[in-house]
Length: 119
Image: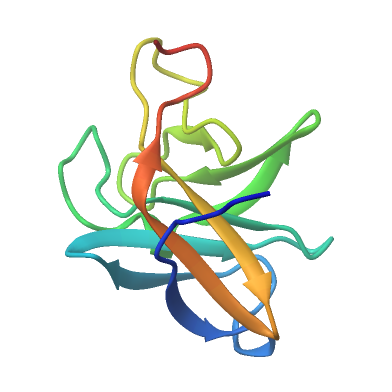
């Protein structure tokens, strides 16, 4: 697979504590990166779309059904970490970024992916 994406290294994988977020600057964009208990990685926009504050990395990580989630630390709206969609307010979403672990380092792609279901 040809992957010409310019990845940005955020931190070493072991430094990312499970169920805790970290904020990173990726190509000028603030991104919130999460590692869940099962070891999966997620990256979403750092800006809360409701309050407009850059706080999502401080959100509470959890789940709703099969969906890994983060709740905004300000007004507690819950977002699906896989898609970025707000599960409490229809039509609201945070951008989702590609994230991977390579050679023990967490890397994030600079451009957000369209939210699932968006065209």
